[in-house]
Image: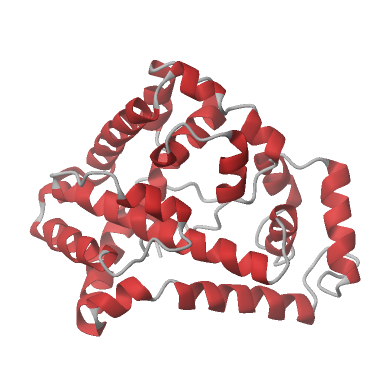
Length: 276
């Protein structure tokens, strides 16, 4: 429900242009620098660890070179400006609506239920100042909630013994996305991808066609269930009634972003173009 509101930034032309304007070279340097900027001038190794799914060499092509071009503070500044421009384009007058202001207040309150312990990306974002305008407050809040959930998801993958490359194969194994889409977007070679497939087949998780077996589906579902459980604190803090109200407010906003093309129909994050 909240993913489209935050993740539109990864597809927004305003963001791509903003990063190019400060000198960042290409899409991926902008991506790695902007998402990791709250951690400071982080090394490629630190970002590989916290982003988990990407090949180390892919990250190293962007970092630390990006910090010699633009400081983390500057990258964060232009990213917020790009988010502002993109949301105004996608949502129009909705950015100034009473519903937006209410959603922003509720989402901000939800983030107060999150702990930084074991949540490196969330911790970095939690130290950033809150924007003043409601549509940007909501964007920052959804960013915090997303990265809080991501940190928990990474912990579940580690617990299940699923490495960064293998995680992609379990997604491809659902049949919802192809290897041709995922592999080049995460930087793994054919040899590394095939080796990961072999490991998962040996564990009984993939069949000969690369699809999840019943055992593989069980492991993947366990990862999703544990991720959901670890993401509960902000919603427990908000309470059932206010959580349901926030979801009711967020759904049409996310739907509008999707309807305006803010999220590609096929994307590596598994987001639905329906906005849900």
